[in-house]
Length: 432
Image 1 (cartoon, rainbow, N blue to C red):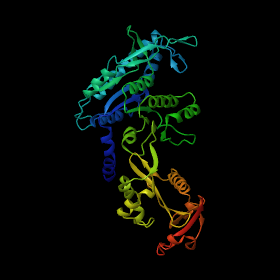
Image 2: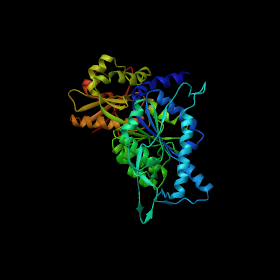
Image 3: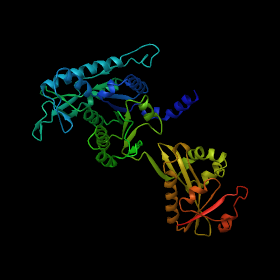
Image 4: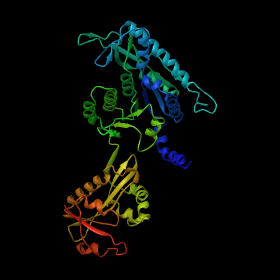
């Protein structure tokens, strides 16, 4: 119960931030067919109830494959795109139509004692996507395979204003009445761009992007994506990364890649600071900067537990307010997760590194090293030649980073007079 209360409290800023925002959510056909689909629907309903304007784009690839197999038709692809001849188009229309009805039915549930109770959602779908044929590429005719020409931004906007969930499929229509089979990633990306969506959410069979060691990559800038795509080669994850980067380059602030297999992945990604998938964002998700007076409250929250443990010297709010310009901080979505301070020592070319602290939930991410580098840069800019640190618990950390054991007798007079012999701190120094 306590964990639930804490989670809800920490989610409150995100609930407020997401209200009245437009999210475009892409769920591939595999996700619709997965056993976790019901939970995803519940999560989307929760977002809607919290005031998020939702556009849901669904794919249908496995459902199309099943219909092709049932009719004895062989699927054909070129450059990873389905070639949609007339018999294939019939299978596409059949699959998309049945999926649309199934999704609308799932979103229309109002069962007692279920997450859907009292939701009373309105689902709207229609001819919101105008398409054009891909045509002939490398001598291959794609027939009824197309690409998005435009999205009916005003029509979708009116429905979102009326609190409807807009449902888009992988079908698009031409002004001459033709039907085209589209990639749902293309539809979702263009919808997010044309609607100026706040977020594009791409569901994936993976938790997100995994690096070469199999670890989750939490955050990427659009310009970092091509290197990962090249490593991945031609696969679905690379397609999602490309879509995410394109959306961000064209104005969508944030794109999230989350798992459709893991229950609650979307909620953990949107309502926690650590997230649950991979974020591709236009701006740095985390930044390092000098502190201002508005940061005093966040600093107190960060360092108070370490002061209580005797790891850091206790500082009052008044002292922090007076010395705030000495601090550099790492900020993550409004939360101060690490800090360090530089105090030039009077009548010497020494500076003291003090109050280096990292939130326990964000350790082992290299933030201490980033702050140390920032403090060293500031010290050099001030013309200081040496950096000193006094510590009781983390001597090994500083020694690994080039600090050498020193002694109280090496402290400049202005600092030696303030040395607290009761704390018996070890003294280390590092030439700059």
